[in-house]
Length: 275
Length: 337
Image (cartoon, rainbow over all chains, first blue to last red; front, side, top):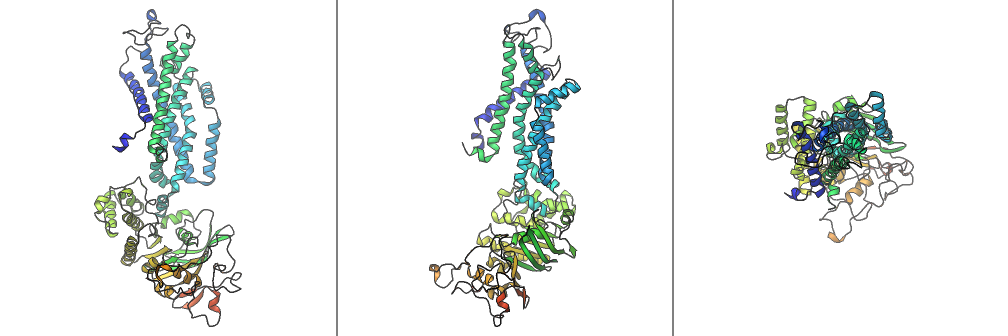
């Protein structure tokens, strides 16, 4: 009960936004008010009505349906990319921490190196070489995540290695890598999960940026980024077409950031004491 | 059987342990005493092949006839837990807070004895019973923070015993406990070594606890073994001025003069590794120092009855059989234990 009462506001607000986003994405799999890609040129540029809650776009497509399908794209890409990049990065960080010495230095310098490389530039390069596609967008966003997770996991793991139970485990005759799996990983999980939540926000933003540039998902699949780019030329005629996906991106990014901050406040006792 | 012969641990040019020799027979209990920074813990870590990576370990460590010193990590790993195990000082940090007691204790059993889940659990239960934890079945699913300090220390002992080691190293196992609990944990260790015929290396700075726990004692100072011998004889009639000083510095309610007398201390501090005299490490703090002490290292002399001591005064005529005097006048050591 104590814990429930002291849950921070940012955690609750973030969780609510993320829950709404996830629900919309899941719901779009089975139901949208209209088929999201259905073109109805006769009814284009309509304002909000009972039929079209947020109106229609320049091709007469229902905006609400497109936003819901766009949420699905965002969440799916962000999820796969963060899980992929997060697993590889966390594994690298734990490996570096367990190996120590020059192996650790080599892995971390490599992470620094890829960190210094502009992520979007890398994505554009991938698209230029392999052609724009959903898979390439996922790979590019996952790649951005690898060094971030490597750093977080390695820093947290190094801290766990200083605790005596790791030594006790070595005294029992275990190797560094088997201790990593059983003792280090559970103790760094909190830090990694917090980071994953924040990286979700980054991934959603990256997906929107790639789609805006035409390097992400291809039509007819819906994406907030592409909705933005299509609305750009019509900004004076129908500004709401740019505002809706923009607000969605803001809400999703804000939601994940608040959730991540809130989770960190809860899981890191040193931070939560401040309140 | 653990045999350590002229073991040195060096950090660059500086010694943390210098030519220490030690042997522990099955069922034998050996204490290692000395104040902080004298090399006890580095010695203990070296016995497990866990000296810091920067350290250079030379000399011989034989475990059941196998030479382990300087061996590869993989060879050490095969012996750790099974042949030589360790009880740690801080039970809270030596137990992973995220694992249940049952999981923690099953780790070495599964690793070394390759038992199934059911058999491992039975083994964990009998271990918990052996170290005197009440209601062992209920403990299996508890986390370390749910146990009391004494129980956690018992779990640590059970953890060290899990793979039936022949040598147990206990590094200050009673520091985190109150005096009453310390005595009970010491008695438990004594009982376990006797029942299992296991050798015990008991590291401590607490002479009272060492007197209760061990049969032989090794006194270390500044990385050197300065005196060794049967525990009671050594603590009653120390030959080395450092041992005498340690004994004199024990607080005691029964001490003549009551609470108003000041506790005798050994003046000065342990010289840090790297700033030690080439001769006797105690020179500079010793009350009965001779001119040659700082430059010439005293050999570990055989004093008969298994006792050995390293002090130049012992080679001076007429001083050989006389116990060393404590540095503070009027504070002769009383019977310990």
